[in-house]
Image (cartoon, rainbow, N blue to C red; front, side):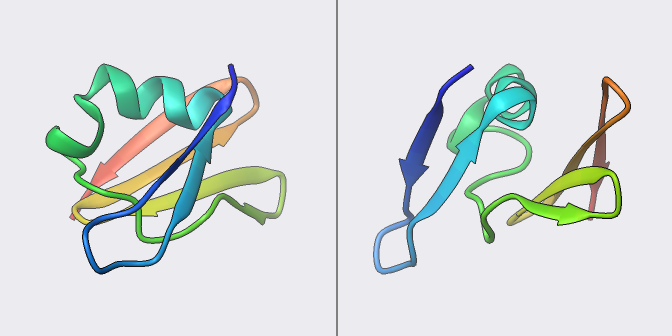
Length: 69
């Protein structure tokens, strides 16, 4: 899945893509449970992680995990 560059009015732009974007879209995207992104995707060991206003999405080992704040 491709990526999207998104910014909240007055905020910094962030890229959301791949499996993390897929899960974020399933949860309603920027208007959903997690809200807008607050980081680009980063590598954390073998995991890919993106943070959002109200939580985090992690993709590792073929699985996506959502943690709400």
